[in-house]
Length: 410
Ligand code: TTP
Ligand code: MG
Image 1: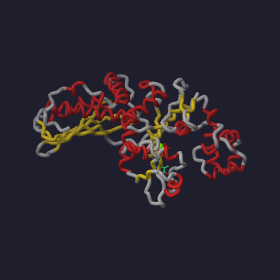
Image 2 (image 1 turned 90 degrees about the vertical axis):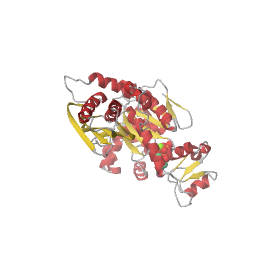
Image 3 (image 1 turned 180 degrees about the vertical axis):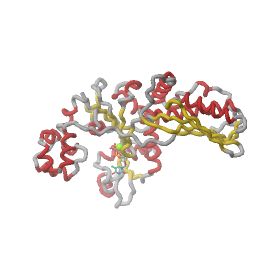
């Protein structure tokens, strides 16, 4: 089911069975080094080591060219330079990596609201809800890799499996720049021949204890009776290792905390007195607020607007909705109504904003009568187009009108 490209690296064939493999693990390849190479293309193809050049520091990461010499993360810089004297040492620039990380995570959120970031360069995604719109898990994984490359110029590796542990294992096996599916039915065939160290959380000490029992592979651990494992590594570890070795991992992909409100606002360079233009701004802002709500799996029950006039006086107005919504059109209707109640006294306007409040998670409320259904479906389609082609590719028709005042702030 998998074929090997470079030694040790596995990628899935196009026709691999990904049924039920709805957990994706994405990890950027040689992240800090890849960002530095992107910023300075003269480094491409060279052994690049990220870290401070002093002999006492340690390596943050190394390009795959440098890894061929045995250079690795956390290795003393002096050792790295001994192994690879031609290495180009680049001091880390953390703010830059954080910015790239945000861009990568944004791509993930375009695909599903269920994103669990693990570190600066990796995350789990649960794509079970995205399958209907975006296709099978493996093709979502391929699309994600393309989108990350388009948006950032960086490569990543993707593991696709039925559980978090197996998805993470798969992305590691696919590295660099690959995608590997571990089919739900074939998981144990892949898992059992691996060394014990492949089990999540097995470090040197645990490995030693298990080796003393004569256990070498994950399959050995799977076959060992639980009481025997307990005596070797303690109750908690034993249960976890036994589960993982048998392909069991009930942990779900956990999204980040629920936010209190979601808002967007626009400050104009020159004050705007054109009410029709301001209403189109409200449509654009409402669309953005709604897209944020949908991408985080949230709905709102209150819509508020903020209008700051040329004299800096600021008015906010809010309305409660009969039903929670994540639909831009609904948010726009409420905000335009609020805006018209304030007009024309607030003109000319310096800043305008839309905010969704009283948020709850778990999609829209189930109600028999759903006035937003058609809009929501349309906007979800827009979300999926944006996931494929990027935000700029899709916009509301009324935003394309060319009669915007020339003084509009960009
Ligand atoms: P990793 O994902 O572990 O490594 P990587 O992205 O460089 O390479 P790959 O995933 O292809 O194996 O870590 C992500 C970044 O975190 C890495 O680029 C640098 C930083 N990091 C450190 O600073 N110190 C470390 O010990 C490790 C492991 C990572
Ligand atoms: Mg990485």
